[in-house]
Image (cartoon, rainbow, N blue to C red; front, side, top):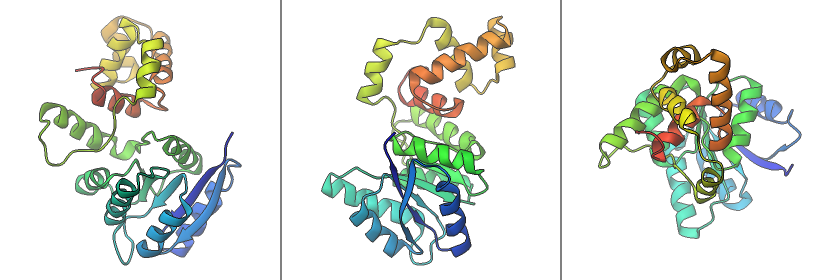
Length: 236
């Protein structure tokens, strides 16, 4: 597989060292730069053009949300969309989460995430898809549903729905009627047991349908599937 180039923007030395150590256990990931503040981080983003940048919100000179917003503006001006942004923080308030996505973050992780999940989040983010920490999934899904109800909402979560490549995949491998029914219940927040009960299926059959849905939607987990389904109009 191709190498994933990452920069880490984090002001606490020990945390930055820990992130580097965790990510470098994955051979595909290469740390190409580090910054202890937003000003240096923004310069690294512009000059090194990594695949992924992990950004802490609590930076000393400019918070990570403002850094995200400034870099997205720079990308719009230069039409260079090489880098995807992953917010990595201990803040999980609704206001902070929505502000981060509103500024243009691709993914959002809590710092207490384990190493394997962090590596997975970086890999998914590098492809341009969103990785959403289960700890804040309900906040995002609630806002996505609200956006669908009120498209003029001023506090929108910037998560894309169906990209052209995914549309082609869905056309080639469409969801079956049963998969659509399962997906609707995933969006409604049902677990496998509840889905099985409602659709008169075994839990094993539901798991098979869920795997098929994740594969066809090119996502890694149920939360991403729900977000993609809502944003892409696959369920109502």
